[in-house]
Amino acid sequence: MKVYKPHGKFNRNVTQTPFGFSFLYEHQKNESPFSWGSEFGIAMYYNNKYDYELIKEGYPGEFIEVDEEDCFWTLHMIGQYEFMSTPAFKSYGEVRVGMTTFFSSRTTMEENPHFEAEFKFHGTAFNTGFGAGVMVNPSRLFSKDKEPGNIWINFSTNVYTGSDVTYRSISDSNATHILGEGKHRSLSYYTDFRLGVLFNIGDSKYTNDELILLNH
Image 1 (cartoon, rainbow, N blue to C red):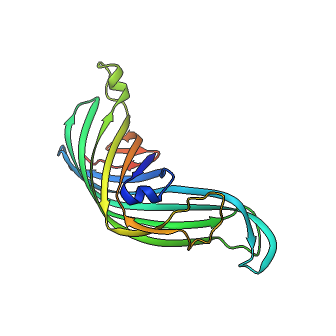
Image 2: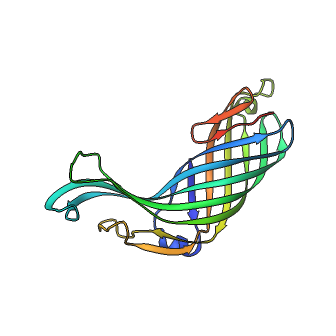
Image 3: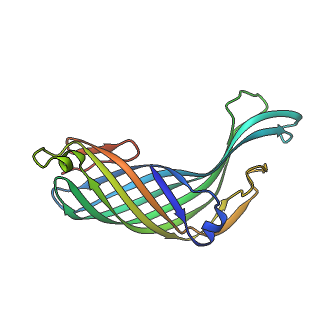
């Protein structure tokens, strides 16, 4: 699970807290403290369900319930350094380079031959970031006599700065808009907070919202 905190003008334009999930791959050679990888994530910061009149489709007076969302996806390359490593606890710092792409969608669960789902991409920003995190092994934490368990809990935070980008942000949740309206432009400056559960399978670790492969 990931939660995002926008900063600056980005924060003034986005009125709801973005949240989502991510999948991550990492490679660590032998016992080196250095590792590298990549992470793909998706987050939503606006959602509204309402009755949509099919005027644009040529059927005024006919309504259908739609689900409208404003979201972004992220893709970053990661370099990580392990500061401390014990059977129960690990701490690390990392740097990131990548991009954030904003998009909107309007979909429906109802079948209607007059309606087609709509997706619109708004803009992409290039980002750099840095952060830190800790991993805790619950099994070893509660009993020093036990071997480290297969489960690790991962907490981390990263701060990103990036280029100007265009995105959509609707402040009035009771209003309906076409997906091309409500656009803003600012720096893509934000912080993310991540909580993940990792499962160690041989030389690999998996999580329900992250995928981490550590090849020793």
